[in-house]
Length: 53
Image (tube, rainbow, N blue to C red):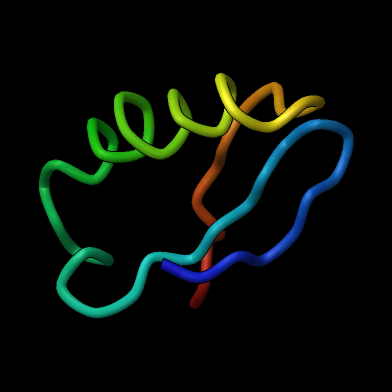
């Protein structure tokens, strides 16, 4: 994954490689990345995946 931005408490990331098309992407974000950032980084209120076309 790659960091894209941090605006108004929302961290935006871009998934790379096989992760970008994974069926478990939503679970990875919410139960993994978001949970960790909410706990460890002050000011984070959520995580979203960048819509890259």
